[in-house]
Length: 213
Ligand SMILES: Nc1ncnc2c1ncn2[C@@H]1O[C@H](COP(=O)(O)OP(=O)(O)OP(=O)(O)O)[C@@H](O)[C@H]1O
Ligand SMILES: [Mg+2]
Image (cartoon, rainbow, N blue to C red; front, side, top):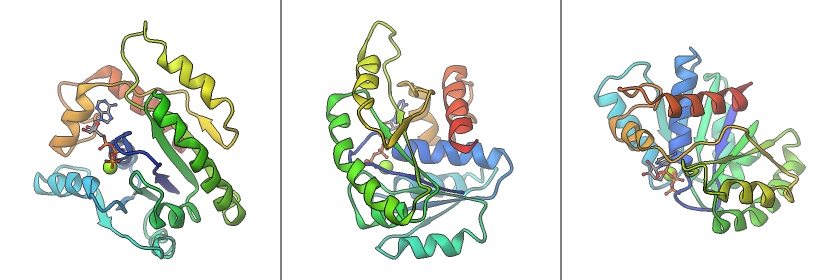
């Protein structure tokens, strides 16, 4: 299974979701490879830290860039049951290339108007990719949603998303929780971080099930 995580906006949680879904998958006893296709290398830094601390399960991460990314991914897919690609937050050759071979494209957005505005262009990219990769499924994840239920931004964003027919909004909303930041800097997924943050674990586990079912 090839999962692509990307979008057209910085800081929406692509690396966070890449890392956390990879940890869930590895704990589920699947052979996982992370491909960090973002020059920033956040996911690769997380992986180096995890390796230095010899945290199990070990998760292999490689950095790959360029317009031939799809070919590299296809050859790696013989060796790994799951490949998760962090394509960064821009319309890039890596994003376009990986869209040609991914089974699922996951794009996180925060519940903000400026994030929603990036979806028009993203939808065009998906339409182009579907010409070649007709089984590509695209999911939107609301990340860093406010924890205060009185804030109505999530309902507003759900309303806006109704006009985008190419995207499937996942049910699980990932809220803004400090444990996601703590886990990242410890080389962990949030499901491994102690003391356990049950709400964060529940959110990421539900997301994992929705994406990988
Ligand atoms: N659900 C969350 N709760 C709390 N903090 C979060 C959450 N998701 C992401 N963050 C934090 O927000 C920051 C940006 O997240 P992340 O690096 O995953 O975004 P990104 O989309 O990969 O960014 P970029 O576009 O720069 O690659 C990080 O400090 C991360 O720890
Ligand atoms: Mg990133």
